[in-house]
View 1 (tube, helix red, strand yellow):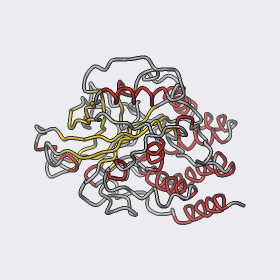
View 2: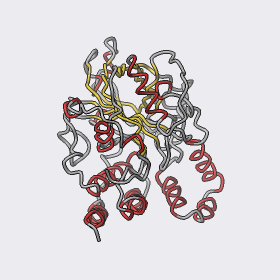
View 3: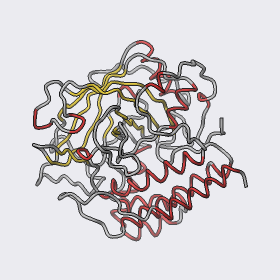
View 4: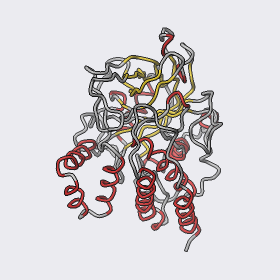
Amino acid sequence: MNLKFARALGVLGSVLCTANVALALPLTQWETYVPGEEQEALDTTKDLMGFMKKDYTDQDKRMFRDAHPRGIGCVAAKFTVNSDLGKIYQTGVFAKPGKSYDAIIRFSGSLGPAGDNVTDARGMSIKLFDVPGTKLLEDQPNAVTHDFIQINAPTFPAPNAHDFAGLVKIKANPAYIVRFLAESPIGHALVLKNALALAGRNPNNGKSLAQMQFFSMSPYLLKGDAINTPIKFSSRPCGPVAAGELNGSETELRDDLQERLSKSSLCFKFALQFFTPGRGLEVEDASDNWTTDKAPFIDFAEITIPQQNFRTDQKLRYCDALSFQPWHAIAQHQPLGNINRVRKIVYEAISNYRHKANMEAGLYAEPVSLAPWNALTDPTYSVWKDVKIPAASH
């Protein structure tokens, strides 16, 4: 038994033995507890870790994320709150109109093994620096970062963690689809349809990352002295973006993004949708689409990605070692709903499992600034251009 395998088994055992804790903070008025949530989280975590051990550790390969393992790349950015933001909205990261935060953004693909040229859902995860306030993750309360997790589709494929767990079981054993459909023929057929559409029929396929709109999918809280309501958030291009032609390679999105950032900056508007009672907007159902006719977007901030070279082995590897998760947040932006409550256990356990299996104790500590990123100045790009999922240890 090699050292990496032994450590991975130890991590798996310790996580499953110690994770039997409350899922999240006390429920808000918009949430409803689902009996068995805690066990659902533990069972799903165990199943996902089993995939990761099989795909990576058992093959003595570097372990990638379970969710969005395909790292297209990270970029340094600025997140600037609108200077004319209304006083009612001035809370949390939006407390000071005009304030700019340094940020690092990870763009990703959800499938593996898969290159950029495979139809897939894409992610845009934002990590802000110098965000004051206690964070909701118990093991990182004093972190100075805050994460916004997004994907280029407005809804989650499953309404709740139980149905998502069914998708995980089908992945492990395709024959389970019979039991899954028998449990709820219409509802679960829709879940399967949604899961297939998220990747294969995503309207953003074939587009540059610079052209895409990204969504939180699930609801969050916006809470302050003058406001207390569920919201969803989204990042969209500030204006029309020239399409360009992708090169058809496994790194076509990374190459396109680097080509654009070699010539000019990129800009995204960060906007919020607001929950309104009686308009058919769901908080507990993560597959519910808050359409803009019911909940229009209001711009809150602007994201600027300046010219830079992110396509280097050093920066791609550093990007892969970062962690992003919905509960790495301050209380004013608490994640809401069953899916998010279960994600609290699953994301944290999977992240710790991955890093310790990779023996990256010196790499995965939550950063406090962009300084470590800015210090990565070696322009070499030779290994990570060919990285596949799963990938050999480098």
